[in-house]
Amino acid sequence: GFSNPSIITGDSHRPDLIVKTSSSSLYLLELTVCFESNLENNFKRKNTKYVHLVTELRRSFKNVEFINLSISSLGIFSKNCSSFFKMLDDLQVSELQKRYWVPRIMNIVIRTT
Image (cartoon, rainbow, N blue to C red; front, side):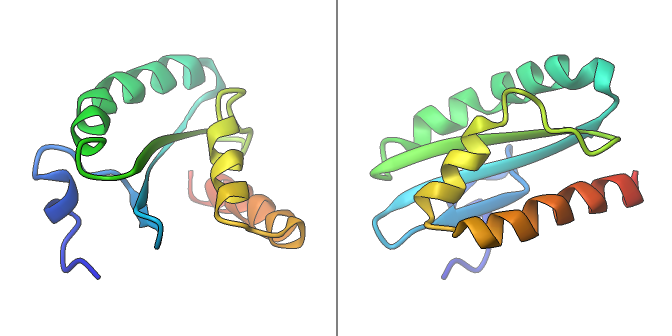
């Protein structure tokens, strides 16, 4: 219902995806694709980059979650991506849908890297 994500996040930070639920929860999803050797460094860098925005948004929304989805160029999810899978559970994504979409995400990452 927002014409531009900047209405929520401002102009300085632009996550890759913003999901607002009917219960006023907000998910900020940031996708990072990198070599396996950089997974941990990129995960930490993105968390640091968005920590201030998440703190600010928690004043306006019931629940704010930052989903740092770090995937290697070979399609391997970082061990720190558990928040992504928790988000799927919170959004009531079925196991069948997860088994469909997670491999598709991995495939897209591999093909486009």
